[in-house]
Amino acid sequence: MKFLRDLFMTRRRISKGDELDSFFSPLIEHVRDKECPDKAIELLKAAYKRFHEDAFFAQQLARLNYKHDRFEEAEQWAKTAVAKRPNNSYFLDTKGQVYRQWFIAKFKAMKQTEKTPESIVDAVETALRAIECFQECEKAAVEDNDTINNAGFFGVVEVGSELLKLISSLDVFSRRNHSQCIKYLLTGYVPAEVEIPWENFHGKLKNLQKIVLEALEWISEDLSYFQTDLNTDEEKTSETVERTTKHPMHWLVNKSSTYGKYFSGVSQSKDQNQGKLTPVMKRMMIYHHGGGNITTIFSLLTNQKVCCGPNKPERPVMVLEQIISLYPSNPMGAQMPQAYLVHYIASHFALSCLSTQSPKLAAFKDLQSLSEQFPKEKQRCLPSALFLLVLLFWPEEQDTEVDKERKYKTVLSAVEHLQRLYDKKLKDIPPRKKRIYTHFFLSNGTGFEKFVHKSWTEDEKVFLEGPKGMKFHIPALKTSSVPHNNENVTFYLGFTLKGPVAYNITVQT
Image (cartoon, rainbow, N blue to C red):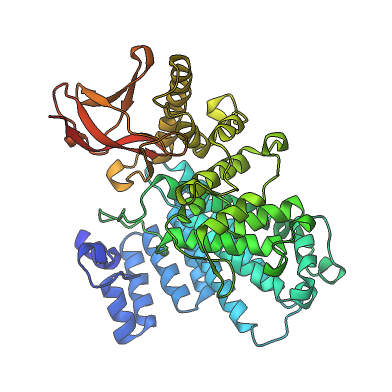
């Protein structure tokens, strides 16, 4: 029985030595390609009955049917799987993908025809059903402590982006009337042309900008925590996502840029005329340029050229300066929301890595003062805010003892809460499956150019020496590298959203 089940369920994986990643098991792939899809579907139906109407076989039938544009059948099998396991995020992802592929097929069928508000109602409703399924997938995945499944968040962004394209293709919202589309999506305004045809989903469309933004921010946070080059599908399991997003960092950069450009409502030629930009438009322009979350901000450090328009590569320094210029000229008095403060400060850290002489670079002490606007109760701070507090208040050699003690208390408190948030984020997943991502290493200097502290080890732990004998535990990235005895060691200090970690620990001789 186990052999037969594996025959139907186990897919090929490059990570397991196979030549490619397959969507179905080799058996099903062979039958549908060498014989016909109908035969493969009949085979899976027989297996569904043979294995006591197992929900995983219903999921496979939904997948196989939508892959061959049999959307009504796919919908029924997806509903069957979800009915049997309503809290399974992978089944909800499959159901969302059924509607997503159905929507894409409907969208393609209309490309050669003139679209009207009435003619696209069915397609819009299908897209909204897909988004609802992906949101249910998000909720189920967050509540499940045994898995990390971000497919729902990716699905919301993908479908939301395609739905915006469809809406924008209408005459009432075409390029020359794009401002009308923005007004419709972001305010209470409803054009007469769509008032009656879309009366059943005005509220859902007006919520689209918010839910896509929330999904992008979730994906950004996940990418800022963990490395993306790991294979998490190590054990044989029937639970797999519909598809894996390759190069998720690049995907996030591109989707964030497209999202920001769409909702900014400004062409590239008007980008410089900031006097006419509303606060919302400025925020969206920041997103378009890559300043909307810390993952895309720090990704600018690895891109020598950043495309901000058709065939218009720009240096990251120029892009970061442009991002910073879109923020209020007096940030201390602007009372920016916490997330905006994070992105503003992170943009300065990124710029400092590329150009310490930039006229747009704020003084390090000004950023320290600005960070005091983060919530005083650390449990209300975003992980990225706590991460920045560690960087901003890491003690320096020339600090007075009073300053050192004050900074250490800030850093220790931030790291304590970062660890709690990390444990919550990791849930019950083995750390080997989700290795932490390091953003910065400590180097010589002050301010933006911090230095490496001296340390010692104690009982197979690494500590930094703080003021008045305070000890700061630094987790080693690889515990096997920590000497057993109390030894003086040197190491590289890396900064992650879990807190500082020690790399390349070497015993001093």
